[in-house]
Image (cartoon, rainbow, N blue to C red; front, side, top):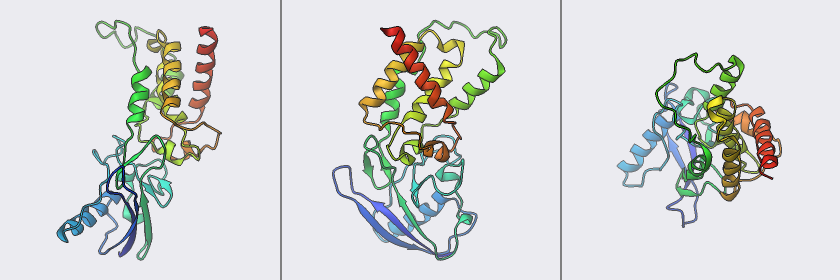
Length: 248
């Protein structure tokens, strides 16, 4: 399979970037998208050119590092999958693929396809903790938690912080990410002691990072590789209003 790739190249955060077109041949169906980029980079290095920089780590859909905008879609055309889980069998011989970094004010481009997503780390640091003394691990059934709450908390906790929700949102909102992090604590008794402080701090940190506001476009849920539901945003809003009232 022969493909044409239009890849965003940018020397560093201070430089202007632009698309560069590359031809790549003999791509097989069983290659992952990142393996295809690896082969392109090998060819570029062999010619004495700079390799294309892109984030990756586990390549198993776990870490959330592989943040690519592929043909205008965060992580590409597969639903509930990361960029590293996208395989070349989804493309046809002669296709042209456009690859660019996630676009958001809070995610500045560092080089080529690599963006700085440390804004997510700062949001979590602002409120993603509990300050109670936990002591030794309790028995599994010592704290009774409704099964429905436990499942919702686990679903929210599956967020890998890849930033696809931000990249897909027309407003570059981080509401789904913050909602998932707030929900995984708010639904469980272990998260109650810091309940009000946490949501206020995380919302404040989110706004300070320059993320946009949610206007219920639902693009975040559609692009999320872990299928985080937008109902978590409603829970975030409820938690925020409750904390704001109690703080008065």
